[in-house]
Amino acid sequence: MEKDPSITASELVVRRLRQHGVSQAFGVVGGAIMYITDALRRCDGMRSTFTHHEQGAAIAAEAYSKLTHRPALVFATAGPGTTNVITGVADAYMDSIPMVVLIGDVRSTIAADFNKQRYNAPQEVNQAGLMRPIVKEYLYLKPDMDAKAILALVDRTVHASNSGRPGPVCISMPLDVQGMPCDASALATPIVASPRPANANQAALRGAMQALLQAKRPLVLLGAGVRIAGMAEQVEKLMAQHSIPWCVTIGAVDLQDHSNPLSGGCVGPTSQRAANTLFQVSDCVLALATSFDQSVTGFNIADLIGNKKIYLVNVDPGENLRFNDDRIHPIEAGLADFFAAIEYQRFSTADHGPWRAQVQQVKATLTPQLEAGMRTTVGPDFLSAYDVSAELSRNLPADATVVLGISLDAHSVFNAFQVTRGQRVIVSRNLGPMGWDVPALLGAAFATDKPQSLVLITGDGSLMLNVQELAVIAGMQIPACILVFNNDGYVSIRTTQSNFFGTQFFGCNTVSGLHLPALEPLARGFGLEYDSLNALSDVGPLLAKHARIGKPRLVECRIDPGQLREPRLVSKVVDGKFKTPAVHDMTPALPADVAQSVSGLFPTG
Ligand SMILES: Cc1ncc(C[n+]2csc(CCOP(=O)(O)OP(=O)(O)O)c2C)c(N)n1
Image (cartoon, rainbow, N blue to C red):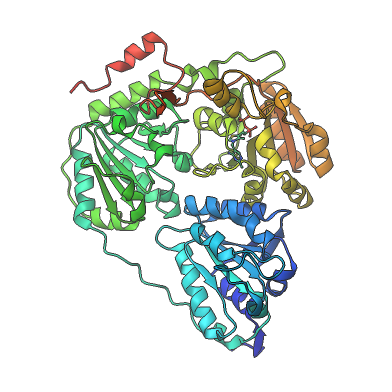
């Protein structure tokens, strides 16, 4: 029984979240959230970390959850606090990340009628209207609710965040409700686990597995949902049991294992040509827990499908609405359902020996070293992003956690960094907001017990969007290593602008109006150690020094501003319409002899 008979509704909610296992909160305090932050202060076992922007808080919570698979709490005040969290919450929604967003709101007695008014009180904005499209559930607590009713709603909301396809949920507490007295004994009500819904179509799941094994060139495609569902080990065993080649999407980039001959690499418009080629030439794809969207298939889905059969196992039926094609078989099921359906079943299998040999041939022919990005000769004062990523992967420990920015930094990792089993690599896989980097590093620091093995690789452009969170990293003395690829602003945008509009750049480098700070005074001003990386051979010694000193550090890498993201899929506008080649047909084109040697892999009939 609780000792204190009456607590505030804020304490009731925060303590219930703690009972649900939420132990990490990120946010910014404010007047319209004051009872909630007071409850956070009092709550045993709940750690609050204060960012300098609510976007940083939401992204930190997202990264924390990507690594722990537990939701973190984001707190934000009414009005600007809530408008500020939106990017991070939208990112979590798209990337299926559980998160509880707890926001303040103006007193319920003076709330505006948004059908007729823009606002009524200061800092009042239509929070439900802004948040509903990017959360799984939006809960507005009212003054006439008692403790039991509030807890029942909170339980349902937290359960929604974590179940099915996970995602963020939002609980809004008007100021009068936040301070309202509630009966603390209601917290003794046990949390009832909701039953797992829906009976998956077991026959369809078995049929998919059977079709895969009977195909000549089967490929399993693993998406981010494999880790989210906690099924990485089972999936790995399944691949080994049937010796089926597999590829990953960028959301599952760290499921790769470069030492495993069945691991075909990472597919996608900015990923590996070898993986995309295997994807293209396979005749049956079993896609497990991936959204199979354009960041996986490229924009030319017709060419990719060709004559192959594609089975999509996804817990979110909405993901499967994308397709209306007989060759694509969507199955609404979670991975637990999939494994339950195929367990103890006997399947007949074709001989995949020749296909496995072809997989080896593709991997041996279309190596990262073949790619223009890897071969670019850089100017005398510069480094190659691809070389830096490759050198990092040779020097980082097997327990490293690598956080990525959204551009050349991530591209160089997708292509040149050889992931070792056990390493984690996290990235914003769908929204791709600049500024994801530093707050994600902050969130990752609370998700690992080895913060000294934390590395962020980001661009000088992306860094600036949430640069303020460096103060938190420095202030908390998080011993992470932040590598900033300084290439005079936005090479990705320079590439787009020159492809479509010639060479007149606009707002993407110093001469076109983008003002960038010097990184050394910036780092030192925030209280970070600073180093400049001038030679590849310095990568190993620098990481060793960093590990020895154990302080937050920013390392400036001068990357050749002319180095592009290569290989990648390039669209063109023809007769006013976008045209994109098939996913394997990446830019720049392969040297003629190499193209000739792989052309034989493509089925002729
Ligand atoms: C919030 C936001 N605004 C704009 C963009 C569009 N955008 C994509 S990449 C990019 C430049 C990123 O620069 P940097 O991080 O330095 O990487 P680089 O392109 O140089 O590799 C921009 C402006 C975006 N992704 N996110």
